[in-house]
Amino acid sequence: MTFQFRVLGPLEVIADGRVVPVSSGRQRSLLAALLVDANRVVATRDLVRRIWGDANPAGARETLHSYVMRLRRTLGAADSPVVTRPDGYLIEVADGALDLDRFTAGVREARAVADDPARVAALLGDALAQWRGDALSDVPSETLHQDVVPTLHEQRLAAIELRVEADLRLGRHQDVIAELADLTAKHPLRERLWAHRMLALYRAGRQADALNCYHEVRGLLADELGIGPGHQLQMLYQAILTDGAALAAPPPSAIRLPRNDLPGDIADFTGRVNDLARLFDLVPAHRTGTGGHLGDRRYGRGRQDHPRRTRRPPVGPALSGRPTLPRPARSHPAARADRTRRRAGHLVARPRCRDRSDSHRPGRAVRVVAGPNWPTGKCCWYWTTQAPASRFVRCCPAHPPASP
Image (cartoon, rainbow, N blue to C red; front, side):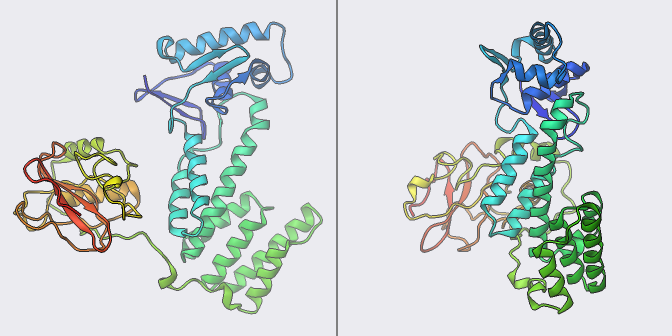
């Protein structure tokens, strides 16, 4: 049985695509107490405190053991992920099966590519999409709401600030003004949000509104904390007063957006929903490499076959028609749907006739294009990137891949 768990909002459990109701408040508290430390042993005394707080009733350990047994039955006794350990309990969660893990992994990856604002904005957008409301909103555990939930919401706010900063670096100041107005109303003491709002207003040609924001936050800080704005806000205020050149929006040439080489969609492509669903089931959404599977010689050459290669383009599925077609009709909607899933667009190349040269347009990253019998190996095409030129290589039983 495959489980999915969600804690960034109301607590949810999904087993094999079916929602598993956890109706008991104590069981929800127990499950949440385990999930916030997934794959780690949670000591019995910590579980008791997370469920009952400081009350610690008599017989709490025995009652906890009873709750664990009931939770296992709720999740399915035979496949329950709740495991007993000598000093406590743990819940086994697969990679990517917990929304909290997906969120933290996305934020971590975004911080690692801080020099690429387009990538940062995309990664943080996906990470923040894991949130469905206030964390653990239906879990009746006062201890979790005091000790764990504030930390989660602080991480969320920090991710929002990073994402807004990336949007501003991309020249999207008009898009974030309304969001920042709402955020500063909800979190009036976060100076970084006020700084983003002032900069967005200034770049939108609303200098007076930007200056009014400064006066507003200065009054809030004085009334609530008895302090003035920090150095960053003060410097930004002075730059806005003097129309500082450093505040100008980046020119379009300085904005690196994800490349989209895909042709327009096809109006008469209908009746192939099942084909597209099967196609995406065959190739996982996050594989990378030069063939259908990284290093798999059946669908393409692995990196070890190209010692001079230093970078690998992303790959994904796109069905082609027969090589005689001037433009593969089925590849367009497949690639466009794949672009929606990956936030990227890449050229859909036209397959060459089977008895012709493999060379194609050098330097253009493309996704895997395969024939009607893919992935059986018949007329499979894949892109390679190697010096001095890129090649579009055929892979099928009758015609082995060309040598680099």
